Length: 477
Image 1 (cartoon, rainbow, N blue to C red):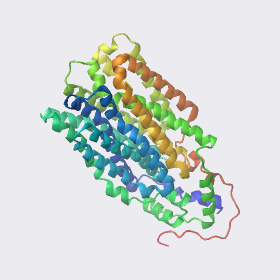
Image 2: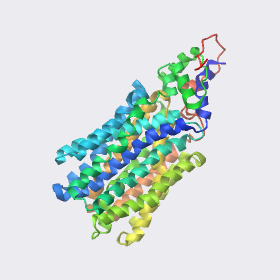
Image 3: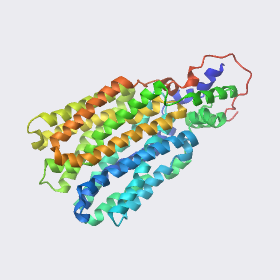
Image 4: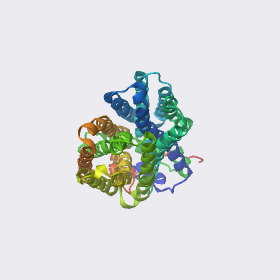
């Protein structure tokens, strides 16, 4: 067997394996973090609505508290993404979820605005780290045929976290729990799902792709492949130098990867302006629409929108991504978002009609999820080589969270200055830009191996004459 072929042969069982219990173990381990991420990021909108009269928050304080975790997530995504490429996936996985637990508990116990603000930063760093680590690890374990489904399922857990926030808030407030206690319970409960997977994350095995391409550890990779698929391929030790050489040559500044970085990071940035701007500020948006409704009424409406529109959208994306492609799901989602937001902005009186507004607002949520909110998470892990996959994914996720920060920060102010129709008009322009960026910068990775999708240098090597070299011993030989 030629060395060039030997390099990718070790991944073939991973690429061709049917979905099994090890895949789902990885998905659950990663997905529980995303349930927590969504709960922690979006519950803050309800918390600040409760805290505003208690702590007499100004508009700027409210906006900063709503958005600081998103800005901190930029740091988390960049740092953890880079560390994964330097230290390994296994070395850092689980640290980010520990930050979420500590941040959630400390936030719930905060005695003042300043302390709560500080620990929301801790939560944000954990969230950003989770975005980068979970995406890369799940991608590198996934098979070729169902990679979109597996990675998308991790992210779809966000939908249940979105739903859990309004549900918990409604239960606490509906049960008559005092506002002074309710907001603390809302924040503190975010620690529970995160704590449940700390052990699993710290015990996860290093991915075979990192073991081979970066660490040069063929035997460990072979053992992990067998653990995952039941097969342990033998790979020539002479291929190791070629793999390492390929990994070193991969750079984000290469024209192809820079274009993909612009596409993945830019799309995520635009999507999160709309998604987080509307979601974190949904209590304020609904208050602008229905100024005389109670906070509990608006929380229930927000929860209904998530349940009826957002949650099914996630699973439509998961179901169809490996059938019609990531690119189509993404640009079509952006397009419907743009049309829905435009209709809300330009049709006279629409923002005065609660049911008409909610129908179009709900449609935008359906296609945010059955669209770029899922695909922007899936894409980065598939289009960069192993040696820079964590860094590329971290930058893309970080740019997304910059967009989220911008959206969450400015929407409360824009609602006062340009009103609800103006906010929707801005979101329409943002969504239209997402369509253009997706169509012009991103490839279609559906159905091909990661090496084929991202142009891993080792996979492109010509077949070389067979050399008498040692092979990595298969487990059990």
